[in-house]
Length: 511
Image (cartoon, rainbow, N blue to C red; front, side):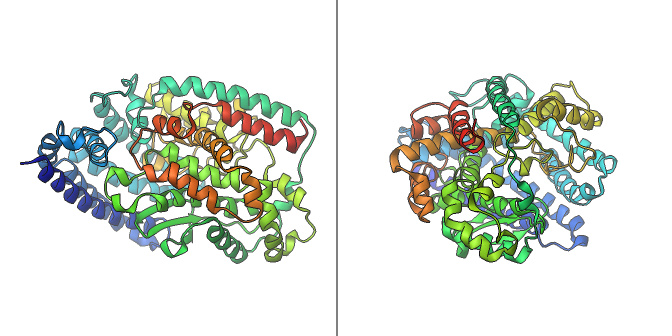
């Protein structure tokens, strides 16, 4: 078999697998938005059956034969060529999939589906004890998976796994390890808590009550759709729907969907939640469509993905220039804003206040929420914390880092959907996304000039086009660290993010 023939077989096989996986994405979207309540049990079985089929395809021995025929050939001599990138990522995925028994893959998929469904009902009821058996099962299966993956050799050039958690983290942020995360987060925590202390000590308190006036859901949806269109989200290639926990999901080219949640007495959740998921969707809509179904056409990591969502939610969406453009329209749609000045509104949406809910946290305190989750996950996988003790440990860390503690489970240990879906190792990518975002944005400002001036005029295309050229179009060609260095000229660091916060909040709070 020639390398060319083998590579063609790989392309056809992997793209067919991607089509099947996209049907799973569609089913997952439906389960979290439209499914009838009585349909969850059947959907869990559907997802388990699909997981079995996808696992069989991912471990098909022919993949190994085709890869062997291509590796070392002229097709992959340039390590950054499309073929070389695809073969590199396919090889790693093949070895990881082959190591996971089909029984485990199916059990985990079903447990995740059942866990998410139960979480959606249990959280409003504050039913931790009812949810705990589901979480225990998901954690046991995920730990079993981690033990298997941790025994595999890492790709050439990546650091070795230092502990069990690394094998999970690597699946979301390739090449990242806990040994690098912990000191990075410690540096970030020191800078954030110092800034937070100065802000709280300034005596200034923006009037956030104005954000809790009446905001009808239909008006929020109208405004959200207008913002999506203005920023560049292709509404003919996506849709916006309500859900319990906002998310973005890519079904395929021409179908990238987002969801949000609206509260009629709170402005931020629906509007900034929409902007956040839009950032994810803009990334997906900007990936090279001709490479769909291959790693070359996929996002490189969740950290880079999160950099795009946090950029549009915060660096763009909470900027003064953005609201100079859109606040007049907001006042037209929401009568409750008629007596509010732009400056007061801008200060309110950027208010800093330690809180319990991660997804509604301000830019200064947000990453402290992630630090709590990282430390709890590390303790769980190191055997230093039992699942039964999670609520107490959660409350203790919130008191230590944010000065607040939950009075119930729904606003504490049960607030996020991630653990019910088995997404251990996922949370750190949120903070990495914030760090990458600040570095990317600073570079864009250097190359494009006054970005806030562009936003003030409603000109978002130059920045979106820059992001697509520099980041989106690359797909998975480069590892996250290499991509950050290629785009910005420097490796990932906490300093640009801390400098961004310092400049912004010094002005807002007169520090």
